[in-house]
Length: 394
Ligand SMILES: [Zn+2]
Image 1 (cartoon, helix red, strand yellow):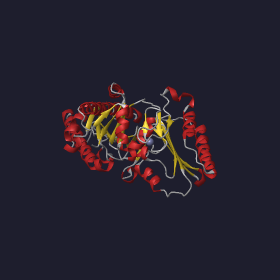
Image 2 (spheres, protein in one colour):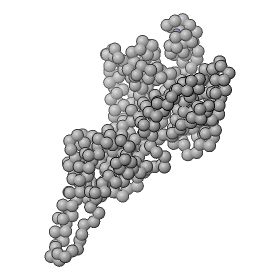
Image 3 (cartoon, helix red, strand yellow):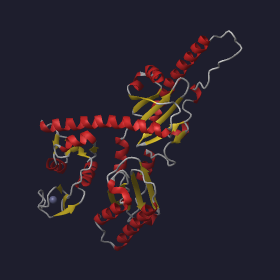
Image 4 (cartoon, protein in one colour):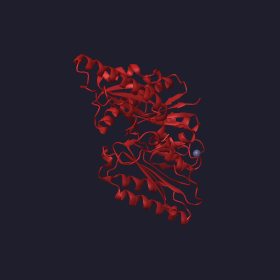
């Protein structure tokens, strides 16, 4: 469902629309243009990464371009050059980078698609018949959608957070808002206590409405996890009132004023998301290491992982953030190896590759597998056993 159809959504931290699955599907439905490949670029532009200051991502792009197997065909060479020029022109003018950029470009068809994302990507460049959307789909699959209900006794606001971006659904609770309690009226006998009791009743009624609205919207908004924000009193009461299925998705409570700034809501949500994510990654790495030691459908270390990949056994590739490895690829059978010796499988010569992990990830995608980059403590733990491993099919 598109939020605007039912609810008015207001983008939070930027004026650009949040990327949707529909956007990506449209790319996939695009007809293949015969003899007119698409340049696909994933570029990390994260300014907190020292490597990216001074707009070094443009340099990264040029370097990746050099690694593309140049087409023999003259016309195609020209096409690739033109696509690259278009992307470079865009990069030159690109200001206020977020965490990453995704570009698909086919100049000869006047096709140029770009989104900047608030999450990191692995630098990747491909030139082939169709846009290379798999990493984008993976990103959308891996990231969970968070819902935040921010409430006090009288008001409620609803947000969704996805891929590091926030949207507010401004009309979600319009009907349930109790904007003011009458404090004076025709009944002069009404005591202060009565007013208080009435206010409490209104507050309860309001939170009940919020809980009901939430269960109605939950299916449409498809959030995986829910955060209750607001006053302690309101969030505790709301948690009690939520239907079981929704309550099970609550991962945290945050004390926030109901009029909190949208970027503040985002910041608090991302903190919780990082904690949840860290726990999940740590569990994954522990399970991987334990299973590998018991030889139960798992391996750790580069050599074992590459071998499993070659044997088509990898279901999930796991590696530590920051892992960058050079390696080799067989010129005949395309096997990936860590050394520059002739191919261990077919004895043909190998060529050096700069980003072994990227190529390994791509192969896992081809096998319909998953790729997981783990950070923080989970990344450090995996480092102890070689920074890489895999959960296997068999
Ligand atoms: Zn080979």
